Length: 343
Image 1: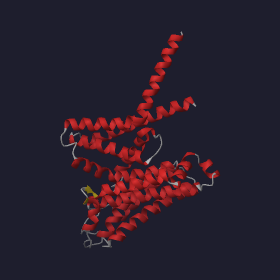
Image 2: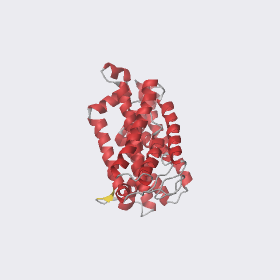
Image 3: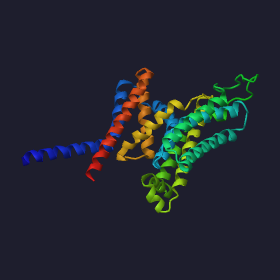
Image 4: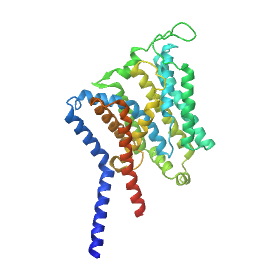
């Protein structure tokens, strides 16, 4: 009997070690396997040019995902980032094409729009008390309706015909397009922007007092309040950051494609959310974090790039993305459940 119990205990310990290892290093191992697999079937995959293309392709999703990360850190959730990006995209394009405004205003005014969306989100959540998911879901529809109404359902492009008659007076300037299409020191400009934002967000959340306050607010708002933290103010800042980053993603998207596409952010919302939750499993973080979010976006970007090289039908991509997300969440929550059971 003792021998059987000893054997079962050993099996249980081994199982715990395997789950713990997968929890901490599974996401990195998955990325390594993906890279090795696609490198073995295509010589074009493992090249400097392809990896810079992957980084450029994930730059917009990463900005959206970082906004979601900030709200998750304070125990919230922002579903409106995709619609905010869409509004920013068409608004940015309209400022150049319809109104022929200078570049500094084209870059500034959409950010103001994002901040206003974040403020309204925080008003619904912090002041009125609507749950985060419901408030931001409502805002997702409101903002989507606003951007379609603003454009009357049309995309915005250089010298487009106007419904009021005539043609638009402006066009996308070369300086603006350089932001989305140019290169600096052999890297696409969007990659530099993404790396700069990731670096700033990482420093803020991991190495500043504000970062500790954010995590304290999300972890235990009652304790944070007793410690003198203004929880409402912190949550408001998180949603403002999320709105501003979504608008930045919209500006970058407009500069990249050279037009204002309606509903541009809608398909990227779920990719951003997936990137954040895949990031939970990076190095055993078990919580929203900047490096994990960037890593999650990279995993999804590399995977989609490899599948494209393999000529897999685009309509099957969502199955793969969903599978990766389920695997990451399964390991994270199984491990968390076992840890909770031990305490």
